[in-house]
Length: 258
Image (tube, rainbow, N blue to C red; front, side, top):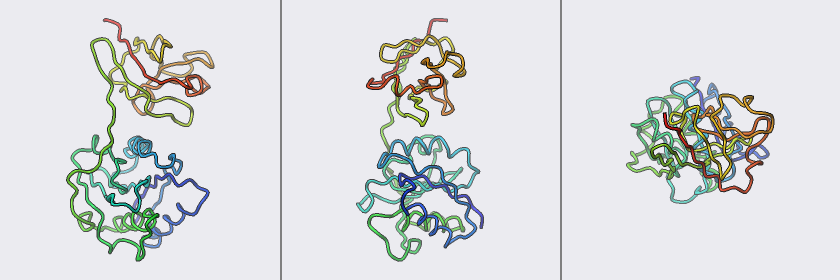
């Protein structure tokens, strides 16, 4: 059965870890279509993994199976879970990595992965990606029911996602993510903004919201609503993360009276 299985990890590509997971999946379902999202999540950075999941899952076909292994608690009492939604399945540790999924795809069903029938025969205490998550994903891709994996989890772990503070004429937020290009993504949704909004980043004023990087001279700071739907602080052909290095990166948005 040809089913998409995505992989998101903090394993990097220098070692055998990713290949071992793929080998397990293909040994169980040779027709699985495996897609690497990224293996460059910073080690143990659960929030960045959660934000990455939030920004890619909706662009895959319905029914995709998304395996996320950023798992600093591997081998401990933390639960292994599968999250069942009307859109897709998500497999990984119960450490908050699916926080955005819970917020955006409610209602969801969360199930503890406890049925050893769907594990490898020997389970390492340090590599559940290979021994639990990969084989479970493969079995699900063959039609195994989520409910066969274990009991429902009533209160999965969620990260504390800071929301912007919205007051009359002003929004206060902060940078939550730096991407590969050095763009600084804030927690302020673009839906709250207007083109004439003034953005202040640690005392630096940006006079408007741009619609493209080219609206400002090369090397200049700008504010723009990026592809994630959040306000970003960027530099045209440069890195905002370098320009604002050492800043606390609190962000204020002033909305002029209409």
